[in-house]
Amino acid sequence: MDHQAHESPSLQPEAPARALPHVVIFPFPIQGHVNSMLKLAELLILCLQRDDDLRITFLNSEHNHNRLLHCSDVTSRFSNHPTFRFKTIPDGLPSETARSKDNLLEVFNNLKLRARDVLAELMAPSDDQPPPTCIIADGFMSFMIDAGEEFGLPVVMFRTISACCFWAYFCIPRLIEAGELPIQGNQDMDRIVTSVPGTDGLLRCRDLPGFCRVADLSDPQLQNITLQTSQTTRAQGLILNTFEALEGPILNQIRAHCANIYTVGPLNAHLKSRLPAASQFPIRQSSNSLWEEDRSCLIWLDKQPVRSVVYVSFGSLAVLEREELTEFGHGIVNSNYRFLWVLRPDSVGSHDHIDAELQAATEERGCIVEWAPQEEVLAHPAIGGFLTHSGWNSTIESITAGVPMVCWPYFADQQVNSRFVSEAWKVGLDMKDRCDRTVVKTMINDLMVEKRDDLSRSVFAKANQAKEAVSVGGSSWDNMNRLIENILSMGGRKEN
Image (cartoon, rainbow, N blue to C red; front, top):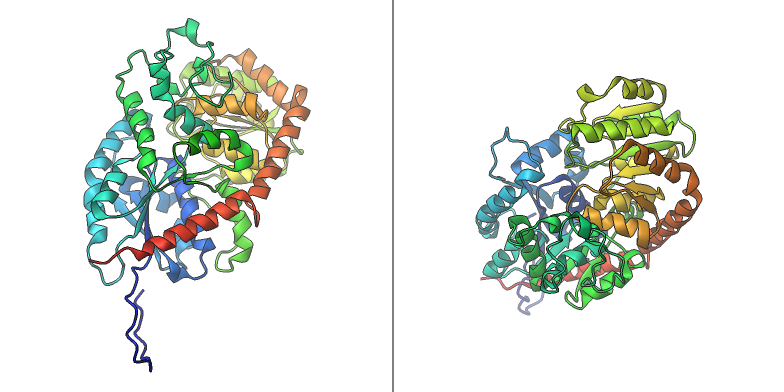
């Protein structure tokens, strides 16, 4: 936005103009990361007094941006904010190649090669945009710290995982030094690990991040994630989508290494808390989905009794083996509970692979969709429990909605999350490393009946703590205001 010069009767020389604050937000291009960082961008806008207080450039992969435009309302949602813009970067994969967990490292390396040039382009003089004054980068991409240092820009990292998982990542060198990694086969999986301070005997080998199960400590994924996590200490700050009452003890451990932490979550609840005070945003549900949401499931839920439905979703990356789909299907059917099951088009468990028994049960008491508006589903009164992969967005959204969980973690951070859900926070049950129809049936029955009261009591208490955190004067509310103040102060970068 151009600012017109105004004549002043004063003869005193004008103070030199400060650089207009301009933050570049750069997520790693997968659903959970894009979703969280778009929520953060929206929060930054809501918290500002005026649109022109801050420019925001959201750097998205070309592939994901095209999907986002097709599947979400993101264009209309940000259309009233001319100081927000999207910019795209190639992820280096052919357009016809499926993006999956198997090519995440390739995407990472491709972005690392291209990011510096994109940032240089943003730094070039422009009539319509001031150069960036700050970068909020995905914590998985520490190469942005190097780029920021080259251009004299402060970098704040955003880890889209839980604090407890970040801390487990951070302690991997300690685990290796203590000889607790590598894990010595299946017989070693229930051994308690002692080199993750603050967990007090909570974590077993099977509860460590999924990539810790490799026998070779030179494994590229293990090495890369360990490196990315260790580099966080070089950043100006660390943003986490969590709240103090949930992860306070672990956050205190992290603060010994990363002093400037902004806990601003749960982001979905924080957005709703800020919306009434921001007239430029209508109060409505919004989507950051890379898949087209099937909203017919909400109509189906409207017809179901209160807390009678098990919601089943394994996130945006998990791919079920045919045998796993079969076992889950039979376990869900044999539980005799109503169910809403999300089966992505790119998962093995597509509609073509649903057997006759599951089809019959679906017609009688179930609903299967390819993708669902998850926050609205979890908030629906018909939902009584969530069978989840334990990704962090799903976990904290379920806690916020007061919905207890059965956890079947798939990879990476999810093993840590599921352990904290079941043993630390007592808001769910951990079913990791088991996929048997009898176990699935038993777990669902425990979730919906046998352990329902205790789990509901715990998750309702956490939901109330989350609401307090994002209310005026709460820890996340205050931390968001502090983040805004610090970003705006970075607008004082010296002009060349």
